[in-house]
Amino acid sequence: MLRLGIVLLLSIFGWSAQSQTITILIDPGHGGSDPGHESINTSHKSEKELNLIIAKKFGTYLTEKLSNVTVLYTRTDDSFPSLDDRVDMANSKKVDYFISIHCNGSPNTGIHGTESHVHSMTSRKSVKLAKEFEKEFGGKAGRKSRGVKDTDDREHSLQVLKFTEMTSVLVECGFLTNETEANYLNSTYGQDILASALFRGMRTYLQEEHPAIQFTKTSTPAATASETSSTTSTSSTYTVQIMSSKEPIETTATSFKKLDKTVVREKIAETGYKYRYVVGSFTTKEAAEDYKDEVRQKGFPDAIVITKKKT
Ligand SMILES: [Zn+2]
Image 1 (spheres, rainbow, N blue to C red):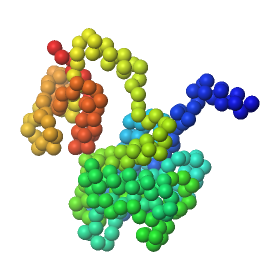
Image 2 (image 1 turned 90 degrees about the vertical axis):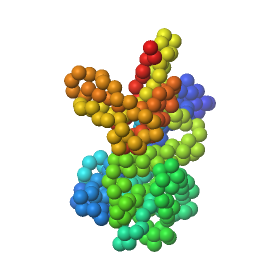
Image 3 (image 1 turned 180 degrees about the horizontal axis):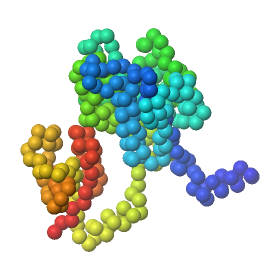
Image 4 (image 1 turned 120 degrees about the vertical axis):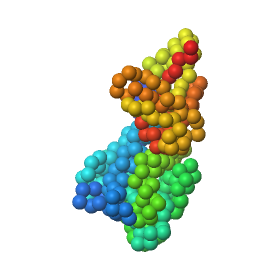
């Protein structure tokens, strides 16, 4: 009877399984006095810095694009939590997922590609998540996927995978000892693509593993209201602003050629950042948002969606 009462109370207040939140602990490998692998190119960032950049981008995508997800990090600066600290944090906070981000290295400079590591092939959930990451790396992201590896493949165990009590995967985003891959890992373009691949893999996994949780963000009441009023009064279209500049840049510039649509330069002010560059025309905000994500991956991380009123 008491139990029924609690269940009733919970459902009255909306605390059903629907409002459950998933906590993901992202672990940027190394840090502080431990740089991790060094790039073949000495002017490049070291592994610890790249891990942090990719980890933060991945975390930002998760928090911006999904609801009912909480993202935590083992470090957000150049500090070095010990491996024990990282494991303790995951276990004491009882997070649902532990994702460690690394870049690889090998004496063989020809070796390149991504790997997703699990403790054991018998941990079904960890293997499933690792497979989703590798599927994205080898698919849309266009990387070479070297597959899912476990302790037997590595011939040694990884502390952060062995002792964490939840679903855990350690991702190797590529080899810093391979020249082409080192350049890719050091580019904003490459980092964005890797982080988006991690995001898509995580999203697919979460949606399949937790069907009762609503991960898709629903529009906020304010946004819905403005969208409604703009469509009823004047019809509007959406476009993607890729950047702005103080001095005019030719729209035939090489950096714009990566985009599959024509870039248009518009003068928006008399001083300061006088020009903006827009690309595409969309009838729905969702389509514009999708294209914005694509543009960001193509090297314009500041791209935003803007509304254009039809005249
Ligand atoms: Zn590492």
